Each structure stands twice: as structure tokens, then as C-alpha cells.
Amino acid sequence: MRGMMMCATMVLLATMGLRADVTSGPAEGQAVPKLPVYAMFGEVTGESADMVARRGDKATIYCLIPAEKFSRPTYRLLKSLNEKLAAASPDVRIVAVWITGNQEESRSYLMRAQRSLEASLITFCVADGDANGPAEWGFNAEADITVVVVDQGKVKRSFGFVSANETVADEILKRLKSNE
Image 1 (cartoon, rainbow, N blue to C red):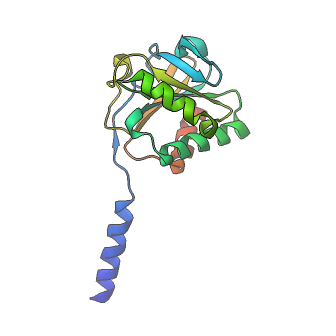
Image 2 (tube, rainbow, N blue to C red):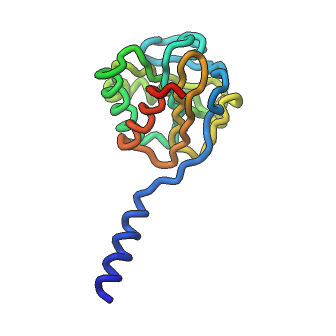
């Protein structure tokens, strides 16, 4: 009996760590919709831009983050992606986009946090529009982060993570490297 209780407890604890993913982001194979933002720092700094037009057909990982859900685990994911790409695929860039109803507040936050957030391959931006995100991107506000892997102007994969950290970086990068 005691063995069964220990086994049940272990199963319960193991499942508590699992994350529930949601559908978020444009569909696979779709042309990447425009993404008007204000780029705070990174590859583009201090200007309004359509980051999709700027990146063109280059491989890019877009990360849409609801401003109120940004967390240390989410940052650890961004940092892990940056480090792994720098080592293996330095031509790929990450565009981290704050989704918010208050652009000024998010711009102010990113300016204060700039030293902590610096990463060589990431451009940090604030999306134009409201807290619902860009309509053409199929953004789901339930996701803590929506990651969209793009190459040759097409969506290779969209991930809507309810709980994300550095442990999902390899899953994302596999899709970038695949020819599907």
C-alpha cells in the first residue's frame, strides 16, 4: 500500500510540471503578416518599423509576449535561444515583441531593463496597437509567450506556451532547422 501511495505521489508531482500549450500565432505555411512595432534596442534601435519587412526572407524567431506576463522563466527561454543561436546559427535573429495596451509604460520598462535584457541576437520591441496583439498574427492572450519560427517569409511553426522556460528552446530550434 505504501508503495502505491509513493508511486501515485510521484506521478502527481511529475504531471504538475507539465505545461498546457494553446493555439497561438499564424498557421504553418502562411506568409508572415506585417508586424508594426517600435524597436527599442537590438538590430533596430529607437524607431518604428515593420520587423517582418525589415527581416525579409531571413530566418527569424518572433516572440510575442504579453507585457503583464513577462517573467524570469520567459527571459530564460529568450536567453537560451540567443545563446544557442549565437553558437550554431548566428545569422538567425530573435524579435521579442511586448504586447500591451500601454505602449509608453512598456517602452519605459524596457529602457530601465535594457542592461539586464541585452542579448546579441534579440531586438526588443513594443507592438503597435492594443493588448490583443496584431490581429493577423492569431495571438492568444492565454499564452505567456507565442513563438513563431519563420524562414523564407513563411511560418514554419507557431508555439503558444502557457508556461515556458529554457527547457523548450531545443524544441523551437529543431523546427528552425527542419526542412518541413
